[in-house]
Image (cartoon, rainbow, N blue to C red; front, side, top):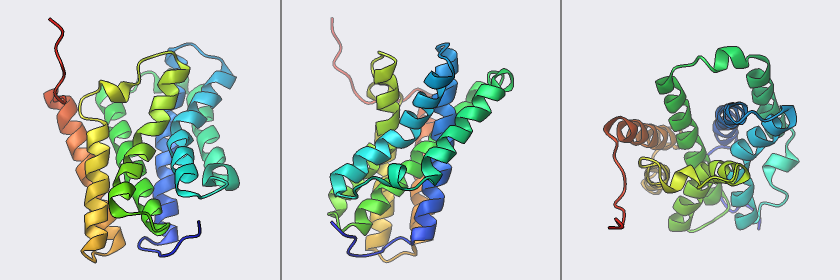
Length: 212
């Protein structure tokens, strides 16, 4: 399928995507270091965390081959982040908890908005574009946790996927209301970031079925 419209500029979308790639790759590489993986493992987890969700999104909307494979800047950004963590792991490991949570929340917001925006560019229904924004935001982390043989964090973390979906919803509504793409993107990222940070601080969770 070819793009049928451009509600969000290509330059803006690329900038958001690459920054989100770097942030999530840092997170994936840091997780690999915590699990004592070797250099190859660090690179694999950085790539999977940063680009897994985008690859799934691109396959679903028919953007073949996915940008993460077609455009060298995406894997280069992910591997650069992996190198930063590998060479500076002594410093990275000393980063306090809250800055790491903030980076994660920022990456989540960036990817959710980039995913929804690209889906809209390809003429996907707005509701499905929101869902694809969520997939983009949480897909890489899910793949990372599966590679580490863990229950995906997105299924049990404080308001994680819900924050991505809300941010994507704000973007899509903004575009539908004819807001400037940069403004709609900023509002979506800010909303996702804020909800995620507040949820972690307040220990908010979605309802669960309690086994008694």
